[in-house]
Length: 338
Ligand SMILES: NC(=O)c1ccc[n+]([C@@H]2O[C@H](COP(=O)([O-])OP(=O)(O)OC[C@H]3O[C@@H](n4cnc5c(N)ncnc54)[C@H](O)[C@@H]3O)[C@@H](O)[C@H]2O)c1
Image (cartoon, rainbow, N blue to C red; front, side):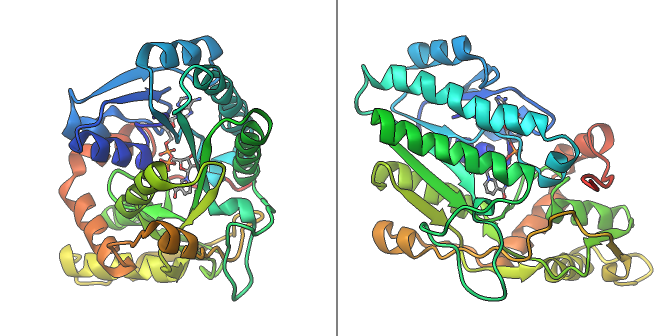
């Protein structure tokens, strides 16, 4: 697995290790990678600290570890950071994916059962109006440097399948949330700002809609696709949990009012502050997961209400994980103003 020390990757590593699978994690350990996220399964996986753009290191990793499959999650993943500095997104997400595909192709030629699974985003499809859903055949129309780099990587993966016959699977998922999420992302940022009694930044009027997917439901979808998906196909992952950003922020505030009320009994939502919108901000993302549900039988276990409560509670109980990040790596400053 590449990117196994990141948010989604670490959830997948914890899951696979609990199932007794033999996992090699390849991770460069950028600001977003954190081995602490794998503490629960310490000693049960192997870590190779390497850059996916390093062809020799990737070739060696395939030869040494002899994988049945690869879950490719390593990426630069934050839209706001892609606005400030697109270079690393082009390098890791595009050049890194091509490098890994080359290593995989060489390996597959002598290991014909091997499959390459690429993890991507619904942001490649662009933006929706008030209604409609993204399906697997929605044309690509990315708008941010992040989504354009992920779209490029999806095209490369398909090209290696169509040109060389490499068995590939692609999943495009909606916004994930849950434990071990780096605090630059909306939900953990809001939780930590509430705890610090700092302003809760809401872009524009908070009307942008995202389709929220609990990370462990995503992990189950990834494993199902890996096991039963048809080579060369794409599967969209989303759980029909559309919320505006403002609704998300207000929900987090209400849960904290309940679980950790402010000493002066003021509601957390009084901290909401509207800030200038993100440049090129897509209005609405929403996934139609019918293919994954009908063909592979996937069902999410959490709805937004249950998943967000679990998530807020996890942050309240796990300051050991986010405290050092919050103090030393990222304290909540605004990114991506353009
Ligand atoms: N988080 C979401 O809501 C979401 C939604 C859709 C798709 N995705 C995709 O899922 C994947 C995982 O997302 P995430 O939220 O866990 O990301 P993340 O930013 O939390 O983790 C990314 C991981 O990749 C590693 N990495 C970065 N550059 C690397 C390089 N050059 N070589 C090796 N490792 C490198 C980092 O150290 C980190 O551990 C990404 O491909 C992302 O595009 C995420």
